[in-house]
Length: 239
View (cartoon, rainbow, N blue to C red):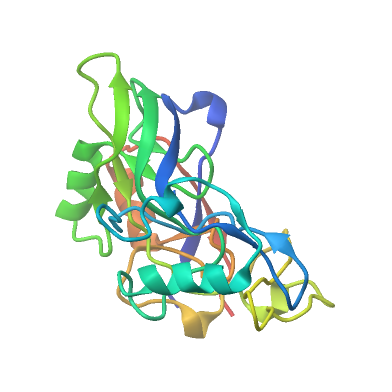
C-alpha cells in the first residue's frame, strides 16, 4: 500500500527566514442561520486564483464578518466559476498572492503557519525535475530582503483526500448542511481515508481538515535525497 506523510514545519527555531503577509482576497466569515456558529475556516487557500478586475474583488480585499448569509452565498457563487466545481469554498477561504514582507536567507521550504507552503525556486525546479506531480508555484507580492535573496514561490495545493471517520471524535455533529462547518480538533492520531486519496498528486491538503498538508513517500524521498531543509514528515496510517 502507498505510504503518506503529514508535511510539517519541524523545529521552527531551526527554520531559516520568515515572512509577515496576508492573502490579497478572501471570503468573509459568517453567522450561520442554521447551526448558529460564527466562524471562518483556517487553511483553505488558492494562491493561483486571481481576482484582479473581478466584480467582487474590492469587497473581498478586506477580512470581515458577513451576517447576511444570503450575501455570503452570492459572493461565493461569484468566485466559484474560477475553481473546479468540487473545490470547497468555505467561509474564510483565501485567494491570490501573499502581500507583505519576507526576510531571508531562507530554508528550501518555509512552512511557517502549517497551512501555507513556500519554496525556493531552485528547490521547486529540482522537485519538478524529478517528476513530482501537482506542484504549481505561484509568485507572491511580498517585499523580499536583503537584496538578492531568491523570491519564494507559493505552492497552490489542491484539496484532496479526507481524514477517516474512525479518527474523528465520537459525538462530533455532522457537517452543517447550510454552512458546511464540521467542528472538531485535529485528532492526536490522524488516519487517512484510503478511498479518498488522490492517485495523481504528490502533495495535497485534506478536504475535511485543510490545515493538514499531505505528501507521498515519493515526495519525502526526493526532498531528503536532495537535502532540502525546512520540513519534517510524520507517516499517517491509511484505512
